[in-house]
Image 1 (cartoon, helix red, strand yellow):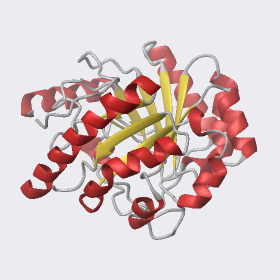
Image 2 (cartoon, helix red, strand yellow):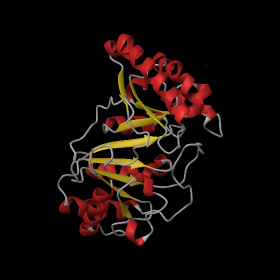
Image 3 (cartoon, one colour):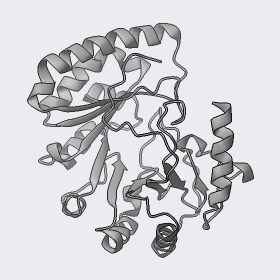
Image 4 (cartoon, rainbow, N blue to C red):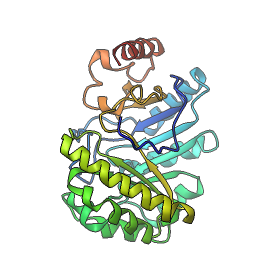
Length: 288
């Protein structure tokens, strides 16, 4: 395991479903180089169908506390997000992962009014951010979020081409007014040993800077240990999430985004098969 293990969201290892992740769409207005989602368009469940599924899951599993909206870019279906929140607003904690390009004041006000945790994909600085995206979007996103910087969590992904910029990028985010920053290496890239060694050195320097300068200033940091550990079981966190694909398949892991249509990789379509999930996780326990 890599030495960096600062993660405020460590969970007790168990397999209770406490979080429902809804992939509203695989469509996206970006084309980030490190994205693991297949942008292939699929049928998308209506708001009414998703609401029905959530109600059915609630009757089967009272442990679900969170709903996370993901994509693609989930704000492409903001109308669906609004309907779900308006119905279940007081029953769940809601999270939204977004690239921020479609955020505007009306959207932000609605989300924050309903206590939605906004996770914004923003890679440190204009140079680093635009390096991994076809379109130059950094300044547009900053303009969209202006005045709300302390209300969101920034998700900053480290790639081999940005290791040298880690400290500068982090300090840039802090100087822009962001108070909560989630820093994580790209877990879908096959890192070479020399790249990992270089990353280790930079992360240790980054640690020292954070604890000596920024922690006492109230800047929140999450630094995940995900390199070479793509599975929650490998991280000893258990599998507490249930995912729903845009067309209605139930599956366990984001890494199965391109495989869940296979019969042995999902837990049913539109109707959740709890026994099939348990068999799948039992197999995962034995293999890891």
